[in-house]
Length: 76
Image 1 (cartoon, rainbow, N blue to C red):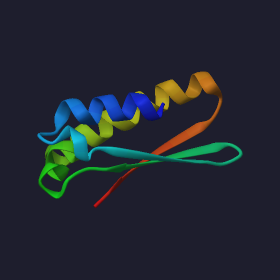
Image 2: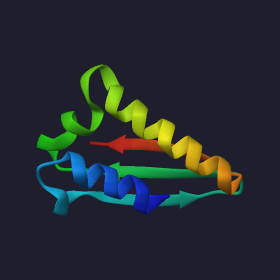
Image 3: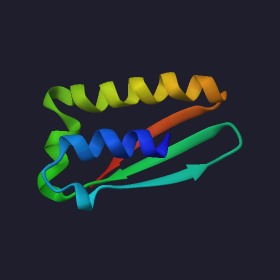
Image 4: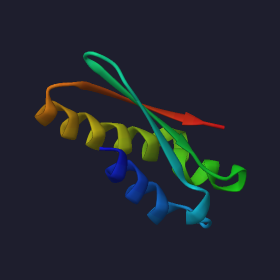
């Protein structure tokens, strides 16, 4: 799932080298922290958060297969 979010984020931003996804795994929950360059933050979030919401929806669908709950946090 980390690779999925990383690929989506790299496709959206101007500086794909700055994209970094940190995975924090718990017993039933998986937290993915997405770090991007400051100037690309708006592109990852999108208008009114639509892009971020879409990424979270895709992540939620993928996590259901594994049987865990996944959370995406976009870190400044």
